[in-house]
Image 1 (cartoon, rainbow, N blue to C red):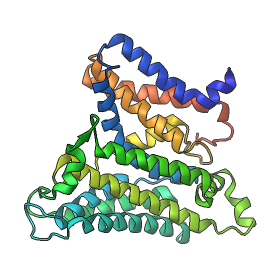
Image 2: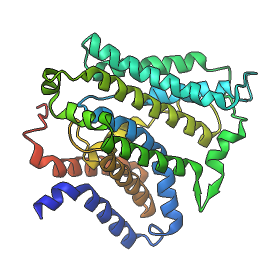
Image 3: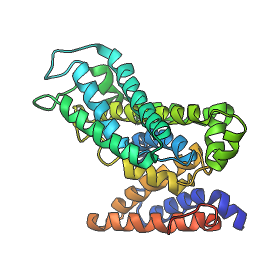
Length: 317
């Protein structure tokens, strides 16, 4: 039983949440609410995918919100919009993704070669990208007129937008990368014992830069999809993405100490967090109490799932 709880604890917690909220709210288990949960989980899941590879290497990336906001602004001013005359069409998407990749790779390079903690570097990069987004922001909110992008959030198939289907496809690709590629295996190995890999002659720095670049690309994609969903360019569009992503990864079992968890675990964590928020709304919990309850549940869940690893995770006291 203890081994089951250790390995499947987050999944059991998700199942428990679904059962509890289904008992107290008839609408929670409806297909309409199921679709609402998937829609709410889509963009946080994309962010969590990128963050997972970084966390598995025992690093951290706090630049999520800044990169997503910058990506949203670059997209909104390079496609057809209500403010500027620039319109490069769908070429804006690879441009924005490349910007995210570049930011992520830069964060990793500075952390590695200047020998600074990734927490400090990415915190600085967060502020830098927020400033760049503000610098690029035009006089007023640019409304996206490129329907091929906005339709990603508007058009629905079987009750779900194309954003959800894109996220599901990305999850499958991320699972394949984690399991069957050298990069995926090395990401976990770096978190488990980086010094041994270095002594073995493995070029660890390449994998670290690749992980941060991939994460930056995921944050940029999140910024693009936020633009499709809200329909405008906004320097604050990425605000609120960081905490859910980190909390979801840790809830699912992708620990901050590295070497643990993975894409599947992080995706379960995203569903736990989104289901918790959705369920609290469904049963009529006071919005002022929701954040407090979410925080308490996260602390209890993480403490329970990592208790057997408390010696290994080297928690700072």
